[in-house]
Image 1 (cartoon, rainbow, N blue to C red):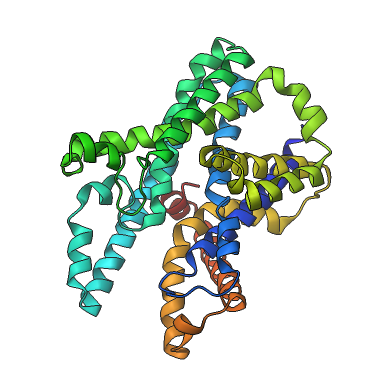
Image 2: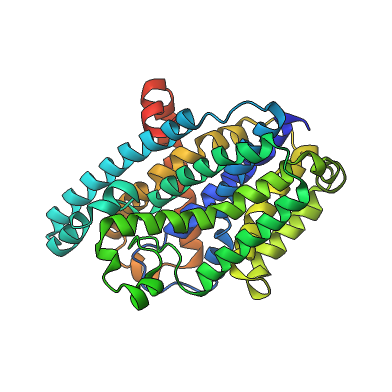
Length: 362
């Protein structure tokens, strides 16, 4: 596989995915969504599954090809240092914001949950992705044991099936990790230990378990695709068929929820996007903008929500009816502007390697 071209395809979809993330968050504070906006946001939900799929697949693929140990410490550092900075940044921003507008109740709610603030991105809901990614990295490190022992592909498929069932049960019973309020196994606790979430240690452990259950199918599918026995699948079914995979991605993302279990739909939409990105290696050429957007996608993810709030604050002053009269075209244009502003700021920061390492782990 041509590594450079493969990365171009992945960078292209990183750019599409980060734009989808901006779309998902651009309608904050808008009470009534315009026509067709829900369809656009539903389609954009492929973004986080794609980012999880590409992160775990690339790490596991390298483990299979190089047989070198997974550099867990350096990988966690590249995630947790930016997480610490942006958690502090959004905390200070929200404290100042709530104090300025006199929303003392929101300020108290924010500060009364130190577990969320420290460990689960409680200062800004989109930061939950970083602890989730860190937990997935621990699973990738654990996969070394199976890779070194050359676990058979059939065994991997069986374990993967069990992981899908576990995740589906978690979702069907309403015990999944709930972003924002940062709790897990809510229905289970309600029946056996109603005050369980008031215990920070138990709450922490249950959230970690829920994140493991969510991440494990991604890691196992990554192992299946990277397994030496899957070489022919790459050669015959992925490479050279970009538009077939694009069609599969569009159908699975757009209509998969109507026919597939929720857990299966989530992983399929993420990995179908990844396989489409890989298959596009055959038609994509070197492109600076695509590579640069892919490189900046993590920084854009971290900073974009702050830009969304500043953007909306300015627009509401200039156009007071924006919140109540926003239409689909306005929201798409706003998403593009926020993406471009976030991208530009990320580029400026990345010129300073030390600062970029702290803010973006690069």
